[in-house]
Amino acid sequence: MLFVEIFRLVLVLIGALSGYEIGHSSHSSTGQVVGLVLGALVAYVVGGVLGRVLRSQGDRAAGRFERIPPGELFAGTLTGIAGFLLGAAISVPLLVLVHSPVVWPASGALELTVTFIGFQVGITKGRQVVAAAGLGRILAPPAEPPPGYALLVDTSAAMTPFLLVLGRYGLLVGGLVVPRFVIDQLQTMAAGPDPVSSRRARRGLERLDVLRDLRVPVHVAENELPEIDDLTDRLVEVARRLGLRLVTCSGQVREAAKRRGVAVTDLRPLANDLTPDHLPGEQLVIDLIKEGNQPRQAAGYLADGDLVVVNDASHMIGRENVVVEVLSTRRTNQGLLVFAKLADRSSLSGVAAEPLHTGPLPNLHDTDFDDTEVGEQIGVDR
Image 1 (cartoon, rainbow, N blue to C red):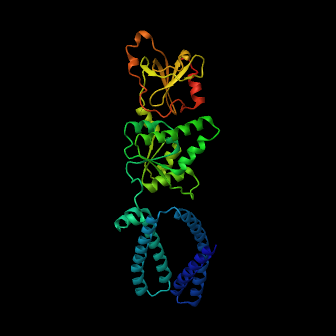
Image 2 (image 1 turned 180 degrees about the vertical axis):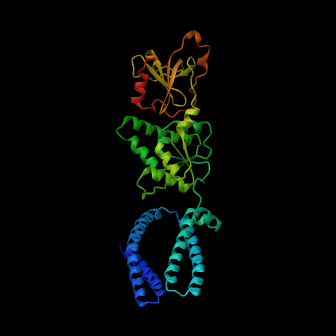
Image 3 (image 1 turned 60 degrees about the horizontal axis):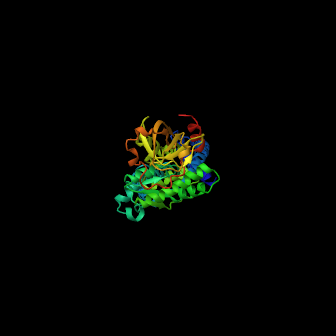
């Protein structure tokens, strides 16, 4: 409230002096008094409105100010000082050449405006300004790992098998960066009562260990940012500060990143493009490890974690290298669901000699799919 009153007082002084100057042109003392009073009254009303608007905007700016990295703050200070000097270079000649009391508050307003614009430019272009000043390593040290090919992982991406597939084929050359609060969230979900979320979170943590075993750099970032309550905003801010591309399977995170200008990759369409379409009649080799949700069904997994449901195969649960024939496929939010039947012995033609599931797998005897969704889908007799 104090800011509003002080701002109003400054505008009243400017309005009164302006009104006095206008009334002075009439060469009448009455006109000078009327101009002074009217100018003061108008400025009093306008100053109250503008003061409250500036105060509310200032509170919002203060919230943003807390999130400004030191390098950008330093750059804003430098450009703000440059703006102040520019305003002074313009104001001093006006004060010397124009002999009017209105010039003084007008010069002050000009100084404030140019300084504010300079500060905003510095905040926006902070990294470039700091680098140009040769102070990048002091005020904005490079993130570890350095920006570039590393990917920042959110909770939804960690709980899918897509990153593990990319890591197996050597496509995660820059490694992964997982914020500490994402690890905490996965651990909380893994210990939670929901069996589906618990299983997927546990598998996500296991996959990170498997990626480390595959020599994919997995770096845990300690950027907690407790001042940001919303986890989505916190994740996007971490990606922005570290200069990393964000990978996710969440539409909400993707849209938030796009709004902030952060590079983001949605793994879901990528996975759909990379996931093979198993045509009807194709033969696969799997281990049948569990019962299906419908009578006489058995289930196993492909090497990428996709679920295969085999009709009339419950008597073969526990057997390895079982040859099955694809009936149809269906895409789900968690991957590809394959419906199959036992292959005819006459059509094996040596398929079992090359099992398709070879290679290290992170305990794939637990499903990544939503039990309800998969249960409804495998309930259809294929």
